[in-house]
Image 1 (cartoon, rainbow, N blue to C red):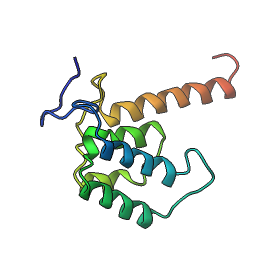
Image 2 (tube, rainbow, N blue to C red):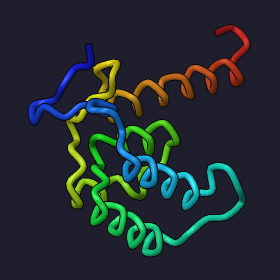
Image 3 (cartoon, rainbow, N blue to C red):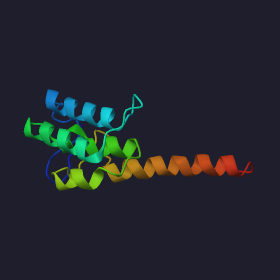
Image 4 (cartoon, rainbow, N blue to C red):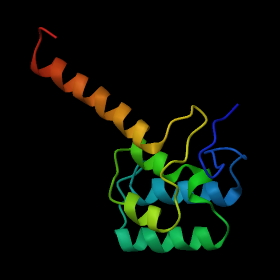
Length: 119
């Protein structure tokens, strides 16, 4: 079973809506994750606001987790200001901060090994 945060919201639970999926696609496209296209922050936030107005839920969609996995911190504060819950948990019970820390730890280990062959 998925763990819930204090407000009872868990990323992916209830299942993502079409609006949530559209929001995640907006993030992926705007950040150029699958292409060389990058949008300005203002343009992305306008699209995110439209998705929210259409019924997307930033926490249920796991928007902060998505940003954390992709090491993008630029949009985190604006999404929190728009209602993303910082203590929202994914189905593994991890918050976006935990996801970011786990990624950073992996990068640190990778860096250390590339810098020092004795590690």
